[in-house]
Image (cartoon, rainbow, N blue to C red; front, side, top):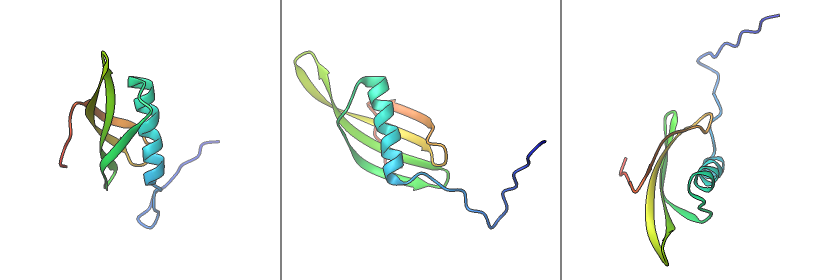
Length: 91
């Protein structure tokens, strides 16, 4: 049996909350850079995406260097669409 899903004008597709978006970024930073602590200094849900700037400290030898990163996440699935370490955007 085949199922068809119709998305009409009156149906709202649920989007990731701020907490869910932060969880996705936490998972990505942990996996990609082994970073546990970060702060979000800009976050905006803009249509179908979350646009987020984060700051964290990255070990460079004996020094903890402040580093920034830019994320763009799909607001529905949480998939990371764009990640740029060392970038910050004003969106």
